[in-house]
Image 1 (cartoon, helix red, strand yellow):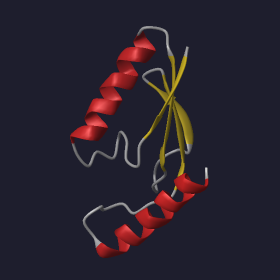
Image 2: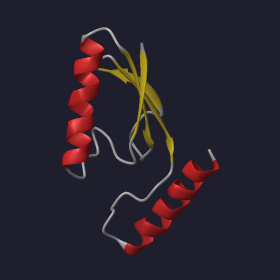
Image 3: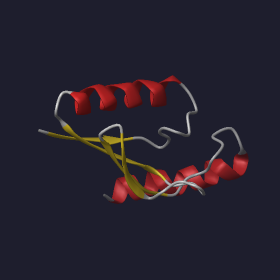
Image 4: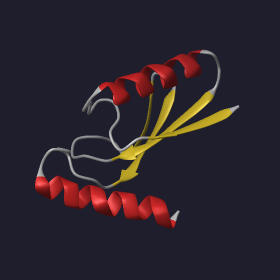
Length: 86
């Protein structure tokens, strides 16, 4: 079985409980033998493609680093639009 989780933020950039819950869910599934992929945002200092804890990370999205700032919200708008286009 293959699972794809999509999250604007994900480990190691944690903004709240949603990222923690998704990380532990992905880690647990990977430990059970499920092929887990995570599509998330890329930020400076992170590899775009890597495997950690059995989770395959694809950091290919661009979004704002701080969800509380005005300029990051503009970046998050383009993230939402890219998801709508598929």
